[in-house]
Picture (cartoon, rainbow, N blue to C red):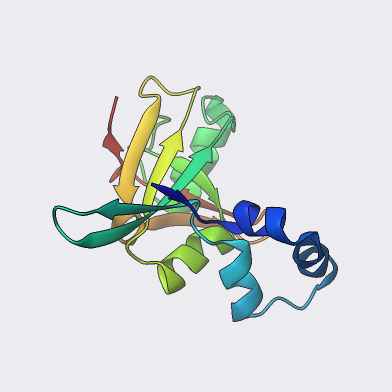
Length: 145
Protein backbone atom coordinates (compact mmCIF):
# COMPACT_ATOMS: atom_id res chain seq x y z
CA UNK A 1 0.00 0.00 0.00
CA UNK A 2 1.37 3.41 -0.99
CA UNK A 3 0.41 6.84 0.43
CA UNK A 4 -1.37 8.87 -2.23
CA UNK A 5 -3.91 11.53 -1.22
CA UNK A 6 -3.92 15.27 -0.82
CA UNK A 7 -2.24 15.06 2.59
CA UNK A 8 0.74 13.30 1.01
CA UNK A 9 1.01 15.89 -1.77
CA UNK A 10 0.70 18.80 0.69
CA UNK A 11 3.72 17.48 2.59
CA UNK A 12 5.71 17.95 -0.61
CA UNK A 13 4.50 21.50 -1.34
CA UNK A 14 2.50 23.58 1.17
CA UNK A 15 1.74 26.26 -1.44
CA UNK A 16 -0.76 23.87 -3.02
CA UNK A 17 -2.72 23.71 0.23
CA UNK A 18 -2.78 27.51 0.42
CA UNK A 19 -4.02 27.66 -3.18
CA UNK A 20 -6.80 25.13 -2.53
CA UNK A 21 -7.89 26.96 0.65
CA UNK A 22 -7.78 30.42 -0.94
CA UNK A 23 -9.43 29.47 -4.23
CA UNK A 24 -13.19 29.74 -3.69
CA UNK A 25 -14.01 28.90 -7.28
CA UNK A 26 -13.78 25.11 -7.13
CA UNK A 27 -13.43 23.26 -10.39
CA UNK A 28 -12.83 19.65 -11.42
CA UNK A 29 -9.05 19.97 -11.06
CA UNK A 30 -9.19 21.37 -7.54
CA UNK A 31 -11.73 18.70 -6.51
CA UNK A 32 -9.52 16.04 -8.04
CA UNK A 33 -6.54 17.23 -5.97
CA UNK A 34 -8.45 17.86 -2.76
CA UNK A 35 -10.24 14.52 -2.78
CA UNK A 36 -7.55 12.13 -3.96
CA UNK A 37 -7.96 8.78 -2.22
CA UNK A 38 -5.56 8.25 0.69
CA UNK A 39 -3.76 5.17 -0.61
CA UNK A 40 -3.03 3.05 -3.65
CA UNK A 41 -3.20 -0.67 -3.02
CA UNK A 42 -1.32 -2.91 -5.43
CA UNK A 43 -2.57 -6.47 -5.85
CA UNK A 44 0.36 -8.09 -7.63
CA UNK A 45 -1.43 -11.46 -7.81
CA UNK A 46 -4.28 -10.00 -9.85
CA UNK A 47 -2.12 -7.32 -11.50
CA UNK A 48 -4.58 -4.67 -10.35
CA UNK A 49 -4.56 -1.31 -8.56
CA UNK A 50 -7.13 -0.14 -6.04
CA UNK A 51 -7.67 3.25 -4.43
CA UNK A 52 -8.36 3.24 -0.69
CA UNK A 53 -10.04 6.11 1.18
CA UNK A 54 -10.16 6.02 4.97
CA UNK A 55 -12.80 8.08 6.77
CA UNK A 56 -13.56 8.47 10.44
CA UNK A 57 -16.86 9.77 11.70
CA UNK A 58 -17.81 10.82 15.18
CA UNK A 59 -21.07 12.22 13.81
CA UNK A 60 -23.67 11.06 16.33
CA UNK A 61 -26.34 9.37 14.25
CA UNK A 62 -27.47 7.65 17.44
CA UNK A 63 -29.55 10.67 18.39
CA UNK A 64 -33.20 9.91 17.76
CA UNK A 65 -34.10 13.28 16.23
CA UNK A 66 -31.30 13.05 13.66
CA UNK A 67 -32.27 9.53 12.62
CA UNK A 68 -35.93 10.52 12.32
CA UNK A 69 -34.93 13.48 10.12
CA UNK A 70 -32.83 11.25 7.83
CA UNK A 71 -35.54 8.58 7.65
CA UNK A 72 -38.17 11.15 6.70
CA UNK A 73 -36.13 13.24 4.27
CA UNK A 74 -34.56 10.23 2.57
CA UNK A 75 -37.74 8.14 2.64
CA UNK A 76 -35.64 5.39 4.20
CA UNK A 77 -37.70 3.89 7.03
CA UNK A 78 -35.15 1.24 8.05
CA UNK A 79 -32.20 3.61 8.40
CA UNK A 80 -30.13 3.06 11.53
CA UNK A 81 -26.67 3.94 12.80
CA UNK A 82 -25.59 0.46 11.69
CA UNK A 83 -26.64 0.97 8.07
CA UNK A 84 -25.61 4.52 7.18
CA UNK A 85 -22.62 6.83 7.34
CA UNK A 86 -22.04 10.51 6.70
CA UNK A 87 -19.56 11.73 4.10
CA UNK A 88 -18.79 15.20 2.73
CA UNK A 89 -20.87 15.76 -0.39
CA UNK A 90 -17.95 16.96 -2.55
CA UNK A 91 -15.80 14.01 -1.47
CA UNK A 92 -18.56 11.55 -2.36
CA UNK A 93 -19.17 13.11 -5.78
CA UNK A 94 -15.45 13.45 -6.53
CA UNK A 95 -14.77 9.80 -5.73
CA UNK A 96 -17.73 8.80 -7.88
CA UNK A 97 -16.59 10.96 -10.80
CA UNK A 98 -12.81 10.52 -10.74
CA UNK A 99 -12.16 7.35 -8.73
CA UNK A 100 -15.27 5.20 -9.05
CA UNK A 101 -13.46 2.04 -7.95
CA UNK A 102 -12.27 3.55 -4.67
CA UNK A 103 -12.80 1.36 -1.64
CA UNK A 104 -14.12 3.41 1.25
CA UNK A 105 -13.10 2.24 4.72
CA UNK A 106 -15.34 3.97 7.22
CA UNK A 107 -14.73 3.90 10.98
CA UNK A 108 -17.81 4.62 13.09
CA UNK A 109 -17.16 4.44 16.84
CA UNK A 110 -20.82 5.23 17.59
CA UNK A 111 -22.01 2.15 15.71
CA UNK A 112 -22.15 -1.42 16.94
CA UNK A 113 -20.27 -2.30 13.76
CA UNK A 114 -17.16 -0.18 14.13
CA UNK A 115 -15.56 -0.65 10.71
CA UNK A 116 -17.26 -0.75 7.30
CA UNK A 117 -15.75 -1.14 3.82
CA UNK A 118 -17.35 -0.93 0.39
CA UNK A 119 -16.58 0.16 -3.14
CA UNK A 120 -17.73 3.78 -3.59
CA UNK A 121 -19.56 2.91 -6.81
CA UNK A 122 -21.86 0.59 -4.81
CA UNK A 123 -22.82 3.20 -2.19
CA UNK A 124 -25.98 5.10 -3.06
CA UNK A 125 -26.55 8.57 -1.69
CA UNK A 126 -29.81 8.27 0.19
CA UNK A 127 -29.92 11.88 1.30
CA UNK A 128 -27.90 14.99 0.41
CA UNK A 129 -27.89 17.99 2.71
CA UNK A 130 -27.27 20.93 0.43
CA UNK A 131 -26.51 23.37 3.20
CA UNK A 132 -24.28 21.13 5.29
CA UNK A 133 -22.09 19.63 2.58
CA UNK A 134 -22.91 16.04 3.57
CA UNK A 135 -24.09 12.87 1.93
CA UNK A 136 -25.68 10.06 3.91
CA UNK A 137 -24.79 6.64 2.52
CA UNK A 138 -26.91 3.55 2.94
CA UNK A 139 -26.78 -0.02 4.07
CA UNK A 140 -24.61 -1.41 1.28
CA UNK A 141 -21.54 -1.03 3.47
CA UNK A 142 -19.99 -4.34 4.45
CA UNK A 143 -18.96 -5.17 7.99
CA UNK A 144 -15.22 -5.92 8.02
CA UNK A 145 -14.83 -6.36 11.73
